[in-house]
Image (cartoon, rainbow, N blue to C red; front, side, top):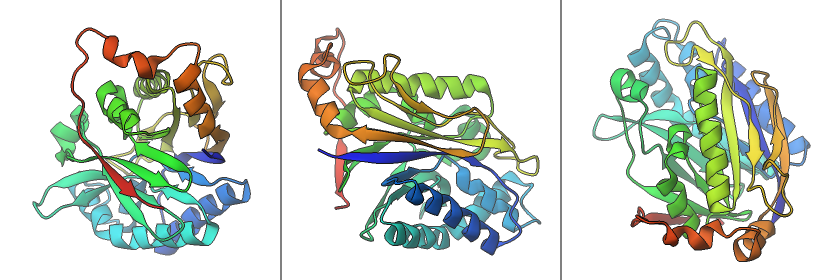
Amino acid sequence: MMRFVVAAAQYPIDRLEGWEAYEAKLTRWVEEAAAAGASLAVFPEYGAMELASLVPATMGDLAGSIETVSALLPRVDALHGELAARTGMHVLAASAPRKDADGRFRNAARLFAPNGKASVQDKLVMTRFEREEWDIAPGAALRVFDTALGRLAVSICYDSEFPLLARACVEAGAEVLLVPSCTDSLHGYWRVRIGAQGRALEGQCFVVQSPTVGEAAWSPAVDVNRGAAAVYGPPDRGMPEDGVLAIGVEGAPQWVFAEVDTALVSELRADGGVLNVRHWGEQPGAVALPRVEVVDLR
């Protein structure tokens, strides 16, 4: 059982002058979260697409942008690993398209522990834009991560709108669900937010949402970004009545902080005002869940 501070980024997409500008920006963000006492920093879905601006010749081309960002991932990940180790934080890096051996791109969120270990959760259900314009392929593995902070899981944006994915992670012991998101309208933001709060209710757990914000007219991928970072819990004893532990000002670049106590997850699952986790199987039509792989980052 662990009590810690989580930082959820409302992360702006910037046009970068060079790698040094990206390195300085990411370092500043991570160090600000660490200085505020955070043990876990969560960055959004497709936040890494700002790296496409490092190659002006292709940054306005969707396919070229994806290739550029994917090629930079080893360097990006090395920087995240270094910052996690230096600050002593766990860091969920902004997701990025990763080119795999089959030639397809997958939307990958990478989790870095301060001890040097790291792992990845790919997005499993693609949005229409990813299917029809980006040609991003779905991942296959659903994972939970054992960390010094407890058992974490990642549900990338649209994935949070599908209850069985989160439920499988809950049955595998997940206490905190991380939801990096990227939405270009308030409709999209609210879909993910409602999904995140629904997963907190069903799973009697904490859910952390981190969105991209701002406008980047130069990018065909992340030109408009709407949303607010937040930390949610089930509306039950020891939690806020509306389940909102903390939430940012929509559209404003900022960190949103909240204290998470995983002991409360155990207490509510054992003796809450309602027992959603325990009673899941009583639903007519309750079905078999996806297999979950446990990854040890301790």
